[in-house]
Length: 105
Image (cartoon, one colour):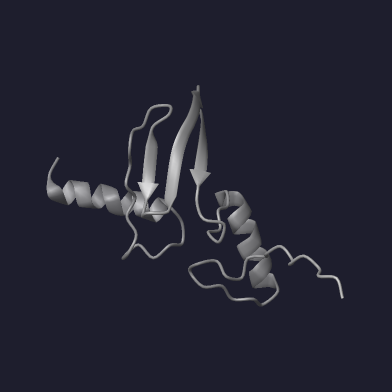
């Protein structure tokens, strides 16, 4: 495969990810077996928990402040925020958060 073909494939894959800015996003495709880990930075681990037919169960270990959503949930929340006129940054700051626990007066 030539470098040009490889670059085209990477660009096509990154466009398939959705509305992310493709100038700064690329999709890295990895092959993992059950129990193997993928690291993102120093704080995030993705563990392949189970593979069954066309389903892959993964576990994600990340700091509590990192927001993790399934794509369909993220898209719904973004659409709802847009309907309410709330803008979000690339970190999803418009996404709803749980209310802090009430403190006794």
